[in-house]
Image 1 (cartoon, one colour):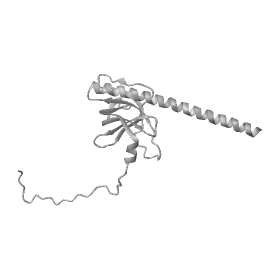
Image 2 (tube, helix red, strand yellow):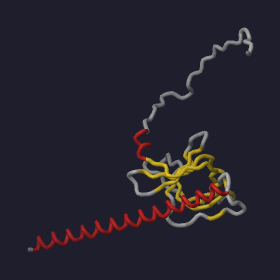
Image 3 (cartoon, one colour):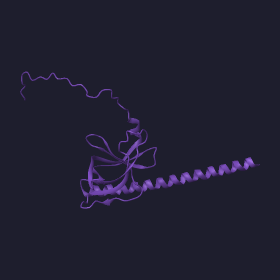
Image 4 (cartoon, helix red, strand yellow):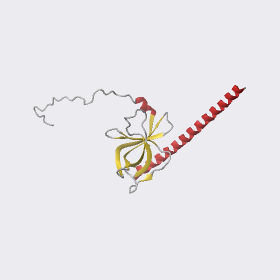
Length: 186
């Protein structure tokens, strides 16, 4: 048993440094998002200025789908700070390429929406990034590649069906306008 030291009782009081924070209820939003794939990894972005790979964050890469959206997205929050480090749609074009010198790392290009645009209100603007993602071993890396390609195909199908739906709506609108024009001419 540890001995207690006399006079060592702490009377310090700690007050929060930041005040006025409100808790945000995200439970409804969380229910609408389903995670299809999740794996721990390291994320790197390529810096053109430094001509080098820069560590962006360490955490779980997630491939998710929102029930109201037809597309799949990739999200990575840094594990200790929970800062958003990657928010991108699984690209429909392009492919994962093996990173030189490593069998457990893949590179790809994507439009990343995780950056801060605090000056401009509204939607964040995407930034085209070259990314590298590194896993614990090659088996996990190959599993990620298979999942990535699977959801890449799903996004391609969703895009083509969306274009088909838009074209069908346009044709219906054009037909309705023709019928209305015929009625008005008679």
